[in-house]
Length: 139
Image 1 (cartoon, rainbow, N blue to C red):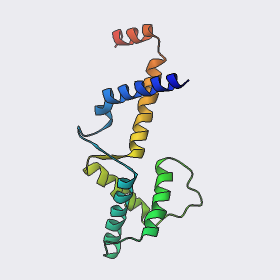
Image 2: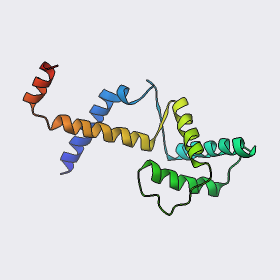
Image 3: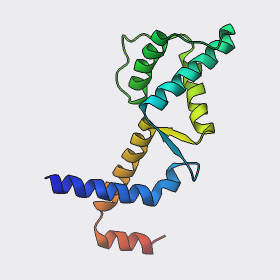
Image 4: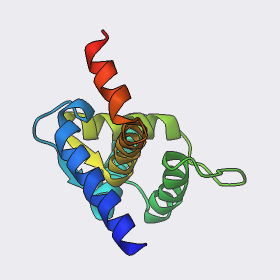
C-alpha cells in the first residue's frame, strides 16, 4: 500500500514539473509558507485600514479572526457562524493582488493546483494505451 501511494506521489511530482508552466503566470514563482501567508494577510488588512481610516495598523486579534475565516473560505470549508471582519472582500482582493504582483503562490493555491494535476493525471492514467494513440491520431 505504501509503495502504491509513493508511486502515485512520484507520478504527481513528475506531472507537476512537466506542466508547471500551464499553472503559473510566471516562470519564477515563490511559494509562501503559512508564516508568509499570515504576514501578507496582515499587510493587506493594514493597507485596507489605511484606505478606510487613514492608519496603517491592524490588531492581532483581527488578523487571527480573519485568518481563521480566510483559511476556511480558501479551502471551501463551512464558514457558517464564523465572524467576518468588515471589508473582508477588499482585504481578500488586496491579498490576491499582492500575491499576483509578487509572483507568489500560497500553500492553498499550490494544493489546489496539485489537485487539478492529480485529477488530470488520473484521467490520463485511466485511459487505455489504445485510446491514447487514437486521441493523438484523431484531431
